[in-house]
Length: 320
View 1 (cartoon, rainbow, N blue to C red):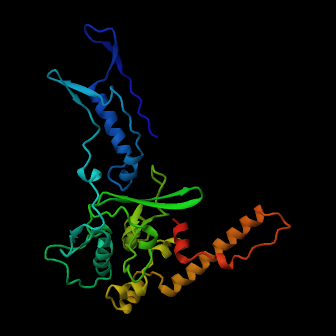
View 2: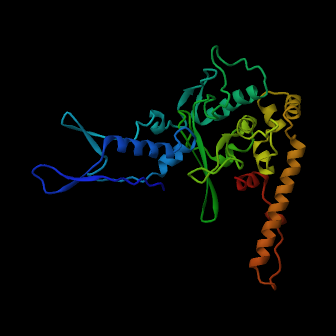
View 3: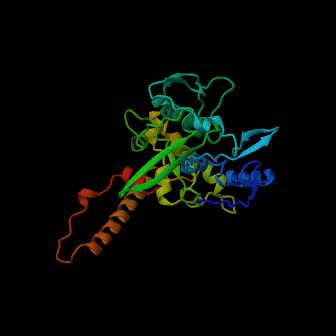
């Protein structure tokens, strides 16, 4: 928690024995500006930082200032309206910003995911309406550039929990992350938000959030080496950011497009990712085995871990 100490003067109003605090308007504005900047208003962190602020009820708050003998309330800043945007219901029919097609909110992420994937592969998307296009760093909910989304990873009673906050009007707050991250018959897009392990930790003790399909953009924008090349990615990040050929096919793309894209961007193909998954599984099992040996008495026989091998999906979730 950040504190901003104030040095008020003590004054007494006419016909009153009760002391009151008095602050210079310029001093109060300066402190309020500092407090607002500390919340990282231009980053995705602003969403979680605002939620983390304590709610204080009291007759003395908010501070007030006097103009022409009228006392007005003083606020740090007028919050953008989309910060407190009312969430739509999952069954609400909404119009896609990219192609104008209507679909239910709960299916919009999958729908928009196809637009983003086609743009990523540089494949002509004939459904895009005139004058519109997928953003450069597109929001996974709506496909535009202006939205902020924050993924939070916490541990509750030993269980890993992921939650997503967003100011996008198409944010589906009842989305089940674990399902959205898996390619299936009913889910053709695994474009979910991801925490970057290379970015500095923010005030909310989380890394920067980016969308899976935007991995190359994020790395090129924030993590290029001095030679202007993409850095070596942690295996867990490569696994999380991998888009399989099956996913391309599910969105109407030729598998050869995936291969060409991977070669051009020096990104591991599906076979290499499968090897990384096996390596990650082996390391997790090795770590679990080491922990069990520390805790278990020597006379207790070891339980086989073969049946407890985590699936690739669980491995991904543990790597956040």
